[in-house]
Image 1: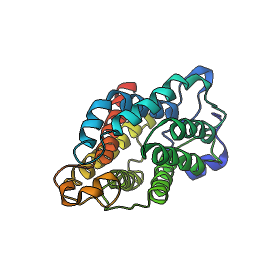
Image 2: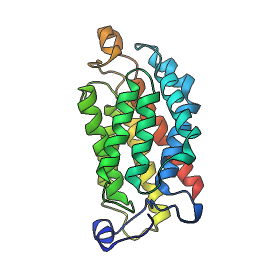
Image 3: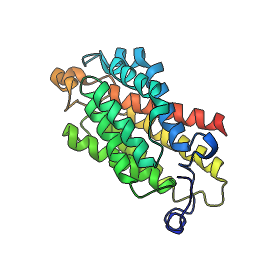
Image 4: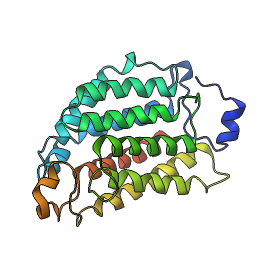
Length: 239
């Protein structure tokens, strides 16, 4: 799983997300997914309270219950490849996260897995590909798009910013590069989530409230931003 092929090097010479967990060491991918899970659990109340403003108030509860099981089942997940690992996480989330969040987040992880099917080691371009695939999966499953006031309004700008930033920073060490990219992604997600405040919700429960949805940020978009912040902070501590 940690072996690097010639095609790996050609595709992403600036690899910063090592998927190899040799000698029991947690891979970068595992670290990110575990951080996402812990952030979802830790922010259960905050996410639910925000979701209750114009939604049904179950976002935090649903995400926390599902990701609690991801953490509980952590050691049983297949580490044969990045794709296999992400598929196992997707199965748990789809089956255990309630409401509309389960299908959406489960689809996101499943599409991310599909984006790296042939990869044994992940790099910057793979991180972008996984996020892009996740967003496309959410679009299809939720019949939503950028501008509908959903989590996509944070996820897509974050992915765009990350993709742009991957083209810079040549010559940096892998660890420093990873922290920089994580900070860029988190900053973009936070700015985009805040920008949902004046928007009119067009999908999901908030859309039923009409103009009442204007004036508060989308809970899903905020969740993406909070999780991205957590990943950036934890990655900086990790290095």
